Image (cartoon, rainbow, N blue to C red; front, top):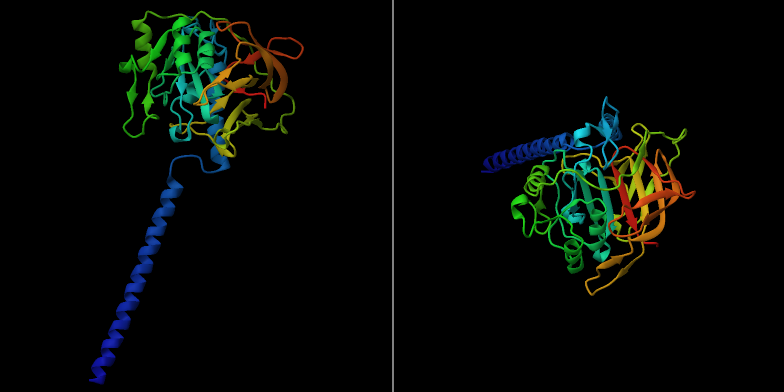
Length: 359
């Protein structure tokens, strides 16, 4: 009987050893698979990858802004294009910038972007697109605010949004804005099933071009900014990041100069910003426009003094210079100038206007 018990214990010990070995092997296999999946995931993982993507974006920027025979500067961004598409009507689209709405779709293809605070210290974006481009998905689309209406108005742009504050909706009607409101034009938008409302409304260039065709809108009619050829500063190796210090930490951004493409790459704090298609947000020009604002109602909506004049900082070519802005009325184009009064000549390409309160 003792011999049988001894054999039983020996067999049980061997079984436990076998189970432990199998468990360890399975654990190592699973760990290897997880590590492989992490390493193989799409996206930017190293400085080399960031440089590669930055080079790709810069190359695209250079290609777009290169002068071609018989071409003209496009009104919205100064890029050389065929004359037939140089003055197409722009489309200004309200873009959600809430953390739950990220990453944005199509924002990297905008020709001009405005960023400003809305209620609760959150920021919202208005992305302006030359109507001749092709963008498969843009959004999420959000609601209108009066100061964004003014910036759309100065471009005589079609204004795409989903609802808006009472004042903004009145302004749209009174100022004769061509209104592409999702509430009444749902056929030009769609709601994504994989996103939660209200961060799930999208539009495409094909959709808004159908709207333009239906309204018989072709050419734009607005004052263009002045543009020039790139002229990077001689020594930009010590260029400091441009800090966009909005009050809410989730919206504090910075633009880091990339001398390879003579442009700026966007970060949220120290995290590189990528869009839904895994593209960088790159700007040729970054403007910090200081605009006084005050809370006007119980839900913390803001009134911004975007008509008038004020101070600005103009950043391009690897250097920032003090300047000023001027907008005589809601339909006039905002003009930026340097401290000596000379109007700014921008580099051809995307411009971001960061609208900030004085403090």
